[in-house]
Length: 96
Image (cartoon, rainbow, N blue to C red):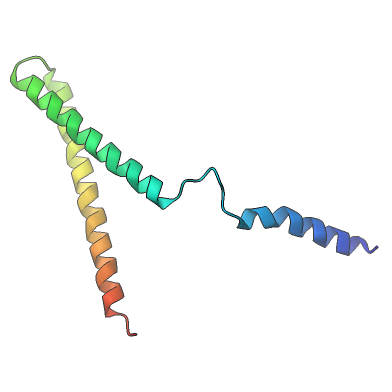
């Protein structure tokens, strides 16, 4: 048996699993679901701190930090939405 053939077969065997789906990776759907849940949790936390600050039970610095995080989350969501709409419009402009 030629050593090059054996080496090629071993290389193919080691490279083949890399082309198969990773069972530990959940996919884009799971990633989007997690991002949406994080977004909702950030909004809920900010709302709870806002209500606590109105009654005087929250630290003003924590409230400002929560509001800044919420602002960043909303701006990120708007940016993602704009990119999705832009991509959709680009697909509509493609010739058939």
